[in-house]
Each structure stands twice: as structure tokens, then as C-alpha cells.
Amino acid sequence: MNPIVLLSVVLGYFCLLLGVAWLTSRRATNDSFFIGNRSSHWLLVAFGMVGTSLSGVTFISVPGAVGRDAFSYFQLVAGHLIGFMVIAFVLLPLYYRLNLTSIYHYLGQRLGTTSYKTGASFFIVSRTFGATARLYLVINILQAAILDRLGVPFWVTTLVILLMILLYTFEGGVKTIVWTDTLQTSCMLIGLLICVYFLLDQMHIGLAESLAAMEQRGLSKILVLESDSRLFVVKQVLAGIFITIAMSGLDQEMMQKNISVRTLADSQKNMVLMALVFTGVVLLFLFLGGLLHLFAAQSGMQETGDKLFAAVVLGHMPAFIQIIFIIALISALFPSADGAITALTSSFCIDLLGLQSHSDWSPEQKKRVRQHVHLGFAALFLALVMGFKWINDPSMIGLILKLAAYTYGPLLGLFAFGILTQRSVRDRWVPWVAFASPALCFAIDANQRALFGSYQLGLEILLLNGALTFGGLWMLSIPKKPHAAL
Image 1 (cartoon, rainbow, N blue to C red):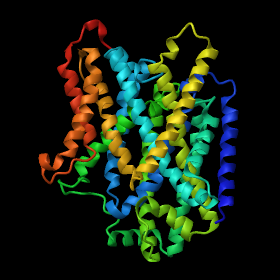
Image 2 (image 1 turned 30 degrees about the vertical axis):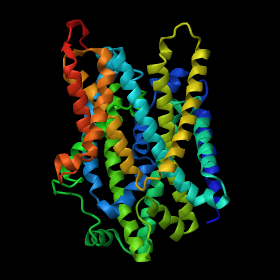
Image 3 (image 1 turned 90 degrees about the vertical axis):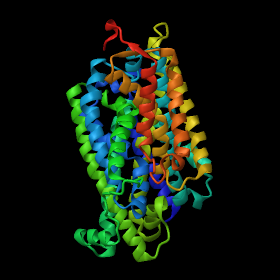
Image 4 (image 1 turned 60 degrees about the horizontal axis):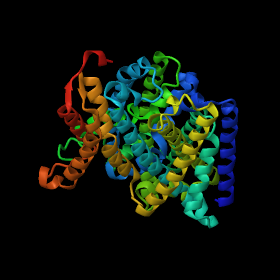
């Protein structure tokens, strides 16, 4: 299809987002930016969070991985579902009881100021790398589909997209992205359903026939029962539980939207509904992946992995499907990027700069600081996306989960120690434990063949990382003073 037409569609979609941002950000304050004035409707938050949880990685990498791993990714999703229930009924009551704006304030109240700053710092590092890896994946597809044919360099594409995100998040923050995420999730899911329908129609098969064809080719296998496999069902379910607790429940971006809901009960309804919808949507993405591989085999295509979905649509589908794909792809891109840059700005301002504690600063001064931090993160995103372009990893979902295992592990250990024990820590030593745990995990991962033989250590590195952090904190701990109880 003509790249000018596709580019026009992208710009038109962006103008729609700007219109939503203008309507929702009028008279916005720092409270609007950070927690949406605690007035977000739970149903909107739930639906919008589906898009944030899925992101461009799910949209591109999950269907592409079906050819290699079949439907085994659903083992991880089963763990996600359990993890979301833990968030709803263990973590959210804690956050609401303490009336938190930043969830890392809990660490300050429970363990100490240094622990609080350490937890916030690990979130900032984790979310920065995770969000930019997701951003890179989708920009790379847009570059190949549209901008390369127009002679636009990759760095210009990245810069323009980041400027777009800045324009509609700069004022309203959470108050705006609750609405834009809802719009974008709707577009992504509509695009997904249309692509599934069209692939079935193109291959002239029905639902039952397609599932039978996938089973015949070994594409629909879910359970992996070989205990030494990296995809062993027990490992995957446990990893899914703790990945969800760490990357959603201990993540300011995800919880910032939840605690913008007025009451705990509504926030819990939001989390449960989001978990159920998320599970169903991932199943649909896996089914799409099976269809894409059937279509590729039928058409004699050579593309695999992250390149497959775009190659099928842009090379073999009519123009209107290509437009739907591009809109859905952008809709998968923006919720993970806009929420991340907003949450990172919030955490940096509140947790590291102590913006809310500066009573001598005027609201205008605080707003200027927040805006400068927002711009700074946009510049950092640009630099890191260019770094991922240089690395050019063939499967971004594997890279993102690997990064998460190293960077969210200390957060998992810190919160687990605070919630599960009644002990205090020697606060000034906490950063040493938090940095030593992922370093030790890296050494174990690099030498796992010598240590474990044929057993493959995979996503359970996150659990090991959290356990090492927990153990290190216990070694530094002392019996808790009664007046410090939370």
C-alpha cells in the first residue's frame, strides 16, 4: 500500500488522541497528573489496563513465537491470572489503607528512607528499560512498513513518536491516559478480531478446522511436562505469578492507574475484570499466531518470529486490512509508552526529588519541575530505543522478560520482606543487598550448565532474585519495634 496513505492514517489517529487529551487535561493539576484526582472510573481503568498489559510485544512477539513454542505461553498466562488475584486482594488493600500516591512510600514507612529510595530507583530502571524495549519493537515495524519507503531515518521516526506521546501526556498525565488507553485498547482489539476473521476467510477454513490443522502441525500444544525444559509447566506458572506481582503489583505505572480509582472495592473489581479480559485476549493472540503460521506455510513464506505478523499483513493482505493493522499496532504501542513515561515522571518527582514534601514551592514551581523531568525521560527513551536498534535482538519478548527478572527481583524481595515479616532492617545497607542479588543471579545464569547440568534456569531467575534479596534483608534485620508496625 502507498506509504503516504499509511502515514496519513497514523497522523489522523494521533490527532484523535490529541483531541481526547485536550478534553481531559483542561485545568489539570499535579494531582491530576499523578493520580487522576482519584476520580477515575474503574471500568475505564480496567479496559485501558488490558492494552497497557498487552503492549506491542504481545501484539507482535506472542503470535510470532507460536511457531517455536506452540501455545505454551498460556502456561505463563495462567500464572498471570493467579498473580492478578494476589494484587487485588493483598496489595491493593495495603495501598489504599496507607492512602499512597507512590506505592514505594510503603517501603519508606515500613523499612526506612533508604529502602524507599532503593525500591523507587529499581522501578525507574526496570520500567525505563522495559518500556523502551517495547517501544523499539513497534517503531521498528512502523519503520519497515512506512518510513523506510519514504526515506525517513529510524531516529527521526523515534523522535517524532516520542514528541507525539509528550504532546498528549504533558499536561493531563494519568487523568488523560485513562481515556486514551481505553480508546487505544478498543482499536487494538478490533484490529485483532478483524485480522483473525480475515485470515480464516483467506484460507477458507472455519474455527474447528483451523484448530485441527494447528494440532496436526504441533502448534496448539499448551502443556510442557519435561521438567528440564525452559518451558516446563510448573516453572512457567510460578514465573507467571511472580512476574505479574512484580511487574504489575509492584510497578508504579500499573498501580498508579489502580489507585486513581476512588474506592478499594472498585479498584479490586477493576483488577479482577482486567485479569479475565487479559486472559481471553492472550488466548486470541495465540490463536492468531497459529493462523499466521498456517497461512505462512500455505503461502511459502520464510519470515518467522517478530517479523511474521507484519510480513503476512503488509505483503499478502488488501489495503484496508493493512490500515487496520497499522492502527492496531499503534494502539498497542502508545498505552505501554505513555503510561510508562507518566509513571516514571511521577516516581522520579515524588520518590527521588520529594516534590510533594517541598511546601515552600509554589504549585507553578512544582509543575515546572515535573515538566522538565517529563522531557528528560523522553530524551532518555530516545537514546535507549536507538541502543536497542543497535542490539537488534530477534525476540524482544524474551529480552524484556529477562531484563525484568534482574531488575524487578529486588523489588519483589523488598515488598515480600515488608509484608511477610515483622522485622526491621538496617536501612543504610539495603542498597548493597538490592544490587548484590541481581549480580549473583547473573553469575548463576552465566554458569548454569556447570551448576545444574541439563536443567535450564529461565524466568524463575526473578523468583531466585527476590529470594536472595529477601534472605539478604533477613541477615541485616533485627526484631521490629512495636511502634513501627503497619
